Length: 102
Image (tube, rainbow, N blue to C red; front, side):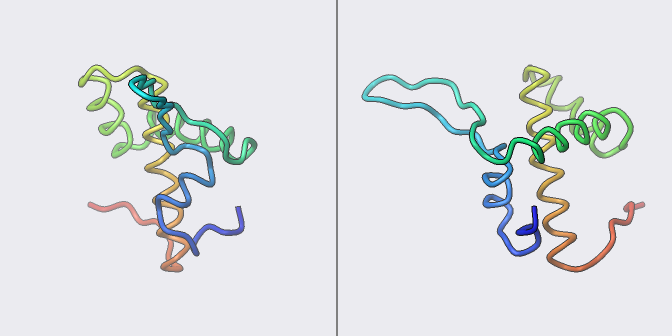
């Protein structure tokens, strides 16, 4: 995704296809689902989120907190994906490396 670093966080999430979209029509209000976006980078980000939720201490805490709130596992993984894409976008826009905060 060559646009990363030049977009706002919400735009980066929408471009990846992890922004929640609700189907609404009249009085009907469906569940929010992810759709569209770029399929191959989304698949790569899914695997990165899966790994981060298991082995990255901050993402693991975030994952467990959302799971304890009763969120389904896939919904929480999408939230981790959004958090990761925001992190990558910020790091690229500020031209810096990720450093673990102690």
